[in-house]
Image (cartoon, rainbow, N blue to C red; front, side):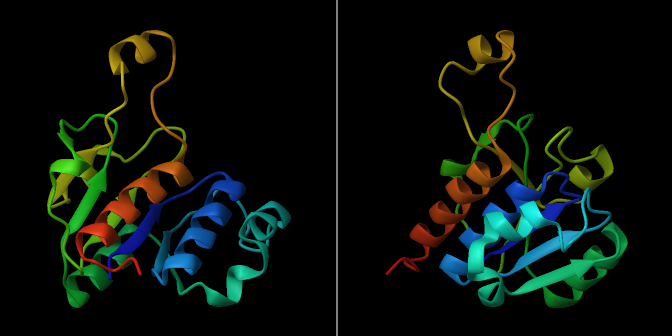
Length: 159
């Protein structure tokens, strides 16, 4: 089963919504600190509803701590970025992939992107026009849902 990794998330409702998606799919959720909120934040809890007990949640003190666990666990690190060229729909996902998503405000830093085995994007229709109008990316929780469900679909894990 692929795992979701949020790198230093900043907006509690986004993380809560991702947690709810992870609960619904049985997907592990990894949070790389520092977080832009307290884990007991009211908005975080509200967005996750009463599904928090169903979330397999792991927190990592920093990028290095996460990277060490990933290496010892195995699996490819697949980074998602609005700056990537390869569409997630052209990628063949594996069951042990780590799907990495960046901060809502500025995505993933260059050194984190460089450590990924692949970098994918979610194409947006009319992306050039949208970027000119100020739309740079999709919401974090939407992006996680789009990519996670494609990975699960490819592996016949949606039943």
